[in-house]
Amino acid sequence: MTYIYHGCPEKMIGTVLYPLNELRTSHLDVYWREVAKYSDHPERMKLPETLLPILNCLWSDVLHCSLIHPGRLHAAWQEAGACTIPEKKFFRIPIQRGAHHPVAIMRGRKVELLEVANYREIATVPAETSAWYVKLASEGRFGGHFVGVPHVLVKDSIDVDEVEIVHWSDHPIE
Image 1 (cartoon, rainbow, N blue to C red):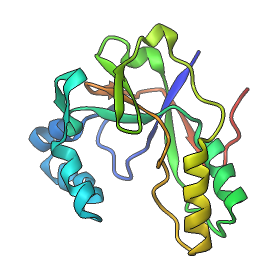
Image 2: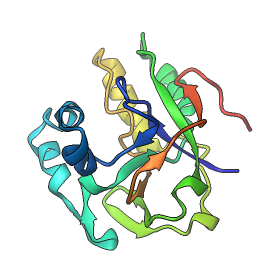
Image 3: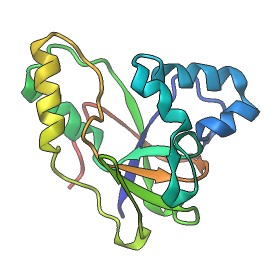
C-alpha cells in the first residue's frame, strides 16, 4: 500500500480533513487559524486564491499532502544541522482514500493529473529541500518543511478515521 501524508491539525474537529474553502463555510474560526500560515510573505498571501486549471479550482479548494514520509524529512533536517526540531504529527493516509476525488501532483509550479493506481511515494528527499534545510539550519531557523517536496493535491475532503499517525522522528517502514 502507498501513502500520502498530511500534518495533523493542532485542534482538529471530527475525523475529516477539509480544504480551506470548505472550512470557510463550515468552521470559520478554524479557517482563519489555518489561512494565517500564508500571511508570512506577500507572495504566499496570494496562494489561497491561485487557480489550479488542471483541477478547475483554487489552491484553497484542495488538500495538500506530501509524497514523502515525514521521518525522511526529519532525518534531512538533522543532517542539515538543525539543533532542535519541534514535534509534529502527520496522518499516514492510504492513497486510495483520495482515489474517488480528482487528484493531481504538483512538482514546483508544474501540476499534472495523477493516476492513483500509478502513485508511488518518494524515498529520497529532493536536493532542493536538503539545500533549503542547510540554509535555514545555518541561520538557526526552522520552517518551510516542504519546500521542494512534490505534493499530492486532493480536490475534496478526506476522512482520516482510523488512519495511522506518524511523527517527524518515526523511521519509514520499508
